[in-house]
Image 1 (cartoon, rainbow, N blue to C red):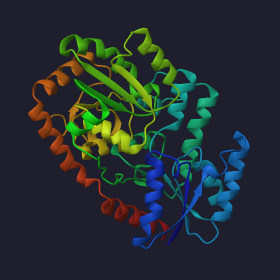
Image 2 (image 1 turned 90 degrees about the horizontal axis):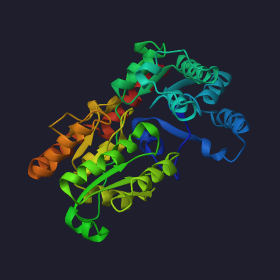
Image 3 (image 1 turned 45 degrees about the vertical axis):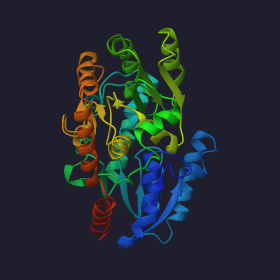
Length: 371
């Protein structure tokens, strides 16, 4: 079988979707599935509307000789890829890792509904309804839809997609390594005191404002506590202004995007990794932190509760729950040996997110539905 991966992100792009597409290209052949790539990055330099027409023609051209098209999102690449699949009479498969319509609604239209509410509600301005409709059409046109968590399966079925048409295939990842242990890396990076690290795209649902607001309370109890918020995104300036307004520059840092090697060093050097998110499909970042052995405090949002069991391989706190964060972080600071044991359990539990399982499940779905 030969498939064409229609993806918006691919190396040198960074992030989970880029890594996933490259992984398919590199290794799916061992399961008798050959892979070609249609990367949106090749037309990204064009004006907005024109680039999508150009991508449609690219997918049309590259689909010659393939048996199916596998799109990695239902909007940016999914819609033109579906049209190309219809035009060339190819089977069309789709992966959904989140609700892009909801992300646009939150960022551009000041929508405050949770994803669970948004996925069932249709009282929005016409432009948001268009995005929601396109997602539903693309899912409806797919032979099968693949999601990385049971939570996202619920969201996609809320769009009106039949449950039998959606399969959960947990993402795999290559366990990361950091060059050094916690003590040596703290020395190398010049870190002291209690260190919290949070990583992600700087967008509202990642909850970085809540972490910034938490820090004065945390420092009033434990003194020298520092927070590093690593990443880039549209909220960068807003978060920087908040840090300056609180005169917290000495203990809250926003260093921007880091190379993976340096990022892993900060995570290993930290006492706690904190992800105060209100929306996750299945966090690739959490899996990496679990493999690196740093204690995790996060929320039960989305697929997080499918990865973290409170008190066993991490700690769960509701988003922006200051009292909850204080209780859990205090417990970690005052019981470091137990926190290390919880992190060790996380390192073991993350082994179930392995490549063999993912490739076997994915190849089986593609072949069965193609036939």
